[in-house]
Length: 579
Image (cartoon, rainbow, N blue to C red; front, top):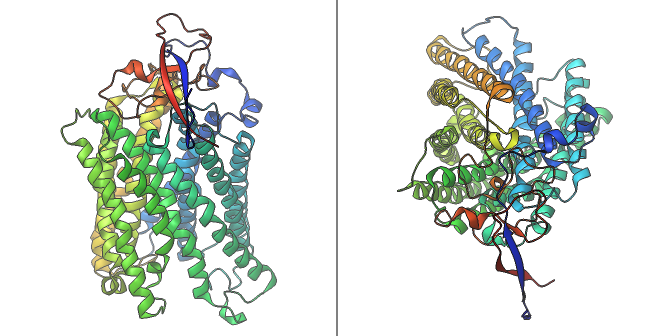
């Protein structure tokens, strides 16, 4: 054993642990019953419960979206009143952003996969993890209480004076719901940061972390630093409504633009809370289905941190028409262009990874290509909106609506679907119907572009967003968009059908159906209650496809714990940072 000032070299005795294809026990069979699920501290079960909750809110918000698109089939009233329309698009936006997009990848897929990719038994604070789920549910209850108290029609951004002009109990309830929801996000971020720092398996150095972990790490930093700003802002708004204190309401001596500054200081970083975890999924799926080492590992890893940092500096581009000084708008415009650079680095490195790869067009990979197409459109149109002269014309038009959906739905949701299909065999131990999965992916691509491409045209021609009625010249565009939303709805129903069907009649999944080198695939499907029945030891990077699979199935040479034979002994050197 050699000890130096900076590092300590330790020799570990390891064996090969090939995951069993017929496990006798797993996390789904370990403890059964509703109470066991409600009180579990297993990160996998908590991730599954988050996934079910997110799917519920997505279905509800999606139903509202289809109702909105149906109303917009004709220029005048179709079937709902104007006030109802305002409440529906407010609820749709709030639910999609705060209950679906923000928690979907980190809290659902991240909770399930992150400890496994680190070779850990669980997250650092398991009880805190369960608490974050219940806080999320409590926030949802408060939001539904707002509906029972007369609803709210402020838009999902809760801009003052709409939210502070005596709207009543509905606004107070929903703002308190979002306030509570923020604590769930903060606790999840804190848990992930601690887990990544302290619970990595032997051999997992920073340069051997999966890129999905780097993405979740950057996301967690944003969650911890940005979410308190939203919480304070929402709390001030609630105080103003309850106690008539002049903070944002001009009638009471407040400043409504101050609310915009506070809100967007959180909400633009929140865009990266939604999309950066998706970047991590894309890196994992591209490497697995092209069977290549990721091109530019450190460039992709550090670009996630760069996005997290620059994302805090660009909130003012949402406020180009709010009366900012010329200097401020120019600086925010420049920073908006700057944040596109680390994102562009990722796109180019992903394409370079695909170059000359052995590409297997399974469903997760299909969603990756859909992501690359849709998110690139969202990115380019974001650059357009970052240009001062163009944004003055396009601000608050359907162009912004289309851009936001291409980034958030074309980016985050497509990455979520890629990750869901990629890890579904690991989460459930079952394979889904590949043919139906590909059909639904194609329908989503067609329906999405039918829904939102016409909105770019409408916006550039001056169609304002959030309008209940519109002039006749926009009718063909709105009707095309509505038909596209119906196609999207059918596609998501197909996904629901074959995923649920796979749980009851799907083909049994092997431990590693994609032949991936990721550590999470060196466990059984579904995983053991403690993820691995040994302590994994890592000697290679997670994308070293030029090395044999045996080198990715190593663990500390302790008792077999039920595994039989074929355990080869070897020695590896572990480098640890000296405390």
